[in-house]
Image (tube, helix red, strand yellow):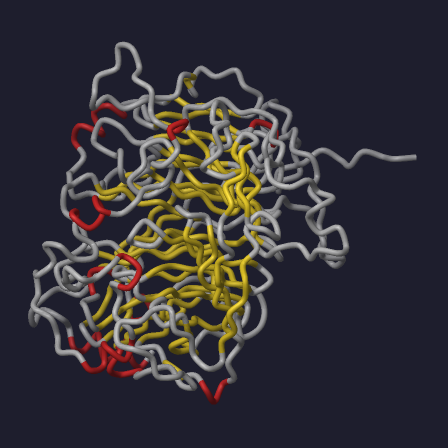
Length: 608
């Protein structure tokens, strides 16, 4: 006979009954200002000081939450799967990370596919003139000349909306504060949120954070009110795993935000008006957990969700959902024992004429669970990593794989692009950060310094130029590591064949070219009964390199920055931000320019 588990309790043993002493009480965030050498990061440019340690109030499980399966046979408690505390930062000022040294000028003979110089060219070419980017990679003229997702499909052309002004942004229809949905448990907006928004400094940083079943909107620029949430939303029977803010539409009057859950549900949320809409409701399109969410570059309506089952789904925030049936070959034709399953499959193409409802497009990557995705700065390529240790570079506009490789061992947890699109970083279960050259389609170096799994890796755009790069990484070892590298320092990847100047199609000796099966063995794309035959694409697959054949890069700084595994890392103009699994958000002020640095404290921090 099956016996229901006991109801959840507070640590003091009282039930979630709503009675006095057992009511579901809201706790406050806690702000501290630790000082001392152990709260300093000593790097070549100076000393970073810990300014604030903000502990977010983690909500207890909801009374109706079902017990989650626990795979640890020695565990004494049962807890839902979580993704740690992840942040999205928003700065509403017009200032952007410096880019005048990040991109080279593109000549008239250059094309989009070969505008990134190879490592051989980098080591032999002089430094280009700063600021000469009028027609180069990263400029507005360059982006205006590149194809955009869905432009070739007339079924995706935006329809005029009656009564809507040209520059007016679309908002969801439902009020989340007054919602009677069983999915939303409680919403706690700030009493004077309108005044707080009006008094907010343009250069100040907003932050959105997901913590278990809570989602919080924070004002990190308000030292006296930093502990107060602008809005706190609590959910029922679901934990938030990821979110993203649309940089293309954000302003002081509007912000588009998408939030993904372990149930597969997605919420489109506009925090200023407190409106929301629910997509993929109850997993109508995909019922596996959402592992990452990103708005498509320079798009107002489209965002990409990666799911744990290996699916990548493009949604339109304003469209209704419908039961999804793959539009490609039948299941008996895909992986029926005679034909192997392709590593990349287009279940629904962006070229499909069936665009009345979501999804806009669906792709499937195998093998393994997708753990992270990242769009390239040129808004053409997508980096995808899985827990089986596979890195895939996808041209998502033409829906084809251009590059694939594997980790040294173990799975990948995170990936990102350099600000100029030349390099891709990966981190994962091999305790390494790997640097991959996109132009050479080969590994450049392995970064050794972590003592456990790498959880997040980001470039610092404020300390990058056209030849020198700074990036950071955090992981389960509770450490923050900072790294510097340049092409001249690393040289060309070992075991690489010579290749023509400016070539991107050539391959090193240790790589293999294979034919990519897109959607099916004949690489056809079905559009409402019409078959658009496409030539099979060549995919570069890079074999795993041994330790002796790859350069090793040590960190320039390694420091334990928390008592718990660090899940997220962000770089802002004035600080570095870290967050851990236990909801600690720490802001590390950058060194002040000039001789104000305290050399004595720096020496003490270095000794520590």
